[in-house]
Image (cartoon, rainbow, N blue to C red; front, side):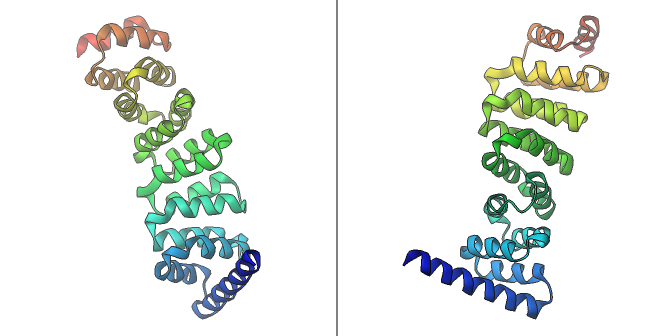
Length: 233
């Protein structure tokens, strides 16, 4: 009986969505209207819309998130479960729909498809570099054993965000200062300004010059360059 009822509900939802699309002349406008009025039914509405119009997934995702930004994580999860396109396409679409929820998008995607963690982080920071610190912090809190990979991926994609990532992660993972600073330096030591900002940020977070020197050299920085940076501060 439960299966029959579910099939009946799915059929009714599909017919309702198709009528709305016909009236609105747009899948995007139809989904935005339905989700806006019935946020409690986002699961069946978005899932059914993606079944009906898999090639229009960008419009469906964008419209659903625009209608109810607080349901961003749910929309991302539903789209990922449908498997209608790559995880990174879904992440990019969701971030473009609601940039302020970028850390929720990345975390939801990493939770659903942890094997694609690095690609998720890369696409998220490239799409919304100004939120790189929030993205890295959120994903690292959910996957602390992947901390080094997350830092590397984010800084390889957007090198200039190193100081913000270090600042966010030292506050969240104070016991992992060695890994945070060493990895950040590894990814930035070729750029003097980036290295300098990372060391200044780490010092402001409470690390001693001895610690900074040790971690920076371990990360591949030149000892004389490190000493000069710390001295001028």
